[in-house]
Length: 277
Image 1: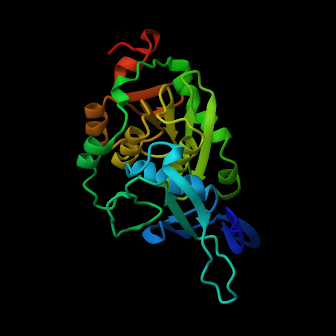
Image 2 (image 1 turned 180 degrees about the horizontal axis):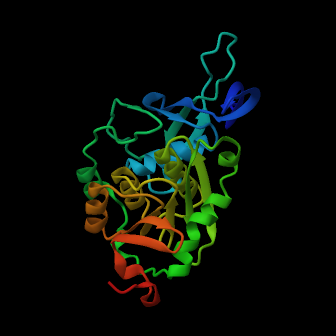
């Protein structure tokens, strides 16, 4: 089966010195997700946790909300010359009575997951749980500890330096699940799929921590999974803040060291976490 990293011989140049060495690269391969035998989407991802990725993608699309909605997930035979399996094609069979999502013909790169979808309206109409109803509170020490806790779990990043990470944490800072991928949206989908397949949806009381920026699409995925808090080490977009405010999601950006910016949902910060203006 495909590996999460691959070795390549490179030329390293530093000042006037040139040396040959072996470098580790984050693997990136296409994954075709089929629904009941019909192609649904292709995404560029880091191989690994593919079943979670497919399940999480369907959660993000509003197609499924519990493990019982999926009958089976299996790899399909690959199109290799010798008839072997590439492990790059998955088929998901929905349980009887579960309607298939409306077909969308799009290609997902490792840097883009929404690709023009009218997602604001989609979230308003298909989100199964309300993030705004979650009463969870977080203390400042817990919040500021999350980037280091996430970084400590990035095993493939240590070898390659080329992966995004997303982690689910309890309100006490305990790591529930961490996933890595070349695509930040894939890393989050892998988490949602893990939660679905382990009967943890909606993710009430949980914090979603991501290693990059907080895009609109990541806020959307948090809402679809019933996550009340999304924290990121980098900046959010204007549309991400708008959606978070509308859906009652707590959105934290620039979470670095002892500082953070709270863009929406500041009521979830415990009183001792609030700083004076």
